[in-house]
Length: 559
Image (cartoon, rainbow, N blue to C red):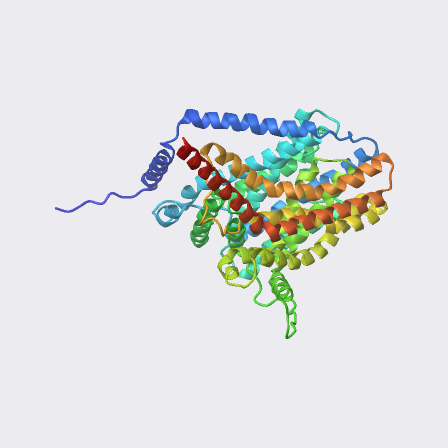
């Protein structure tokens, strides 16, 4: 008796793959109650959308009129086109380095090696990736659009739709560029893969030149889409068509996806999702660097000499600076971009767009996380710090010196960007405020990094949070560092108010700088005494519980 093998035809293989994915989806979602899921989505839409509308209506800025409207028409499309150019650069770099798809490990080990057309196997994950990119871009663009609609001519609803269209186009440019770069360059030698970065930087430079000079940029049509809430130019749809063509071309070449890249990214993405679930921001940053294949230099850009006798502060300072001097070029360029964005956003706040304060806080927060690498390394290796004859708070406090010294050049870059955006009259105020503002926004990164340090008292006294408060506590823990960064960025509101009241902007800038310095020093002092404060608070609570227990025991004995 012989076994007859069933031939695996493309139709049979595709049907088996569909059944496999449908079964896995049912197993994954089988324990969920669809009514409960719908209720959660309903609550998220009500509270999330309501919060956005409430914050938007609470920010009451002066409507843009006169020459400012002409500036919006002149600089708006190239500036927003620069955002699209940066999205293309990110997509090209990510695609050439193995992105943007990331499958689960079983799919890579079984589905990709099965006798099934690879294009059919990857079509659904690629479509999901495109859907996520376009949806995220449209959502963020819609929020920004309705904020702009409160200051510019046109209805808020029209600006909402224009922002969604612009965001969706930018998302398509990113994902389309990534898919095309992966299909064309991922199997090429290293020097050819670097062409993606060269092409992306050339597009960014061209669009930047369009912003400062009277030339046409490659992404002006995309940037002009965001102004459709005010006026509509049908020719702007050419940018959307090009982005759509990039996505279609990337989907058509999906069969050229590298299996080795999928295998490498599958494990990293699984760890990344777990880190996001656990709100471990430090691990998320490290995994993102591994996904981008970003490696530090073996030798620093500049070797620092040390004396024979060095104190603790000098040793920690030299170690931190050496770590920062090992940053690769890509990270330095990224930090420069965040500094420029921070300066431009703060200039927008000074000009009257208060809503830009949130984006400025986010840019400064990310810049702070990048430059706080010495402190982050100390937190990651807490067991080594515990073996040193120095308090942990003292050691972490000294690790703040090198990052804040390294922030000075980026603060100057942010100041130059803000001075160019505000004009020459604002140069003295910008020079006074650039360092305090950048340091203040980076203070949120300090809180985030130090907060993730292991608690030395956790083994002796556990704090249990009721389930009803767990979600609220997690939200506060996630948002609090951003609030700190927002407080550091908000000091520019002091000179803005002074200008509106007719006072001297330079004197107000000095007061704001003093407030910013005091704010940064308060955060640094908190890092130094954090462990001691927690120890005293827990000791106080323990003594209170002991006293209460003793009082109850004496009451029972007397009765």
